[in-house]
Image 1 (cartoon, rainbow, N blue to C red):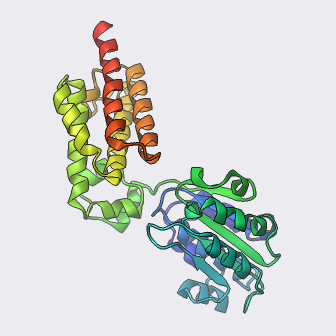
Image 2 (tube, rainbow, N blue to C red; image 1 turned 60 degrees about the vertical axis):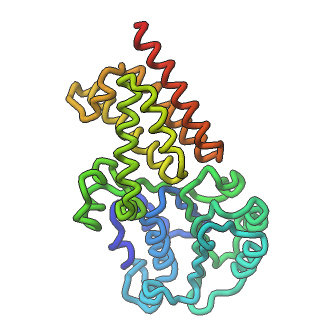
Image 3 (cartoon, helix red, strand yellow; image 1 turned 90 degrees about the vertical axis):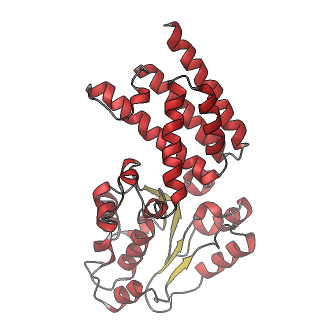
Length: 315
């Protein structure tokens, strides 16, 4: 059974197993969460549960279960846009037409759409009517890592199931030779594990840590220069934000639990200042995602941190 291979997400699986008994209550599911955490595997397991011919579905052994597992069941349609491209209006119309075709072998048909946030607004609206009133035997599973980019009208018509990041224990099962620097970033998905193969991410981790330290040791010129380097590539800029948020959280935990943390540069900040800093980092992340000029976004972040420093010096 496919679901036996899922790491974590036990609460979500338990819900789906119950839902499989009365699937008509949720003909459209929206799986929302980070990429690389197993959403697609859970979705294919859901298809297995829907198409299984046995009473206690999914059995993992019947003809339908085996064909879904092998990836060649004619009643499971998997749709994914090409890397770096959006899903156009014509593709959405084609997908909608396929939804109305009768199943070939099973009593139901399942359509799994990956990266659903890549549908243009025109494409999403073209599919909306079908999602509002899907054919009785057709079930949709929409996967997204950016639920905020999905049209609210579609979210309102779907049962949303949220997925979190994988636990460190699960990732270490998949990748037992993770280096310490990668563990320190609290990786949470298979996509994250792929980062360690690229030396740029290790360099960014080290530079991000150094920049954060420079900010709070009043080496303002060094910090400004380092932030400029960190802004050069979008994926590395977002990775920087993540590293900072983890380090701020570690410092906050140290304050609350009165334990020594490794984020020495942040120890002098009060709990209030740490919360202000986390808000600035979250705002920086939003600016990066909004396609604002990254260099200017990091410069604004640098200026905003100066106000926290002035507050520290005057208190």
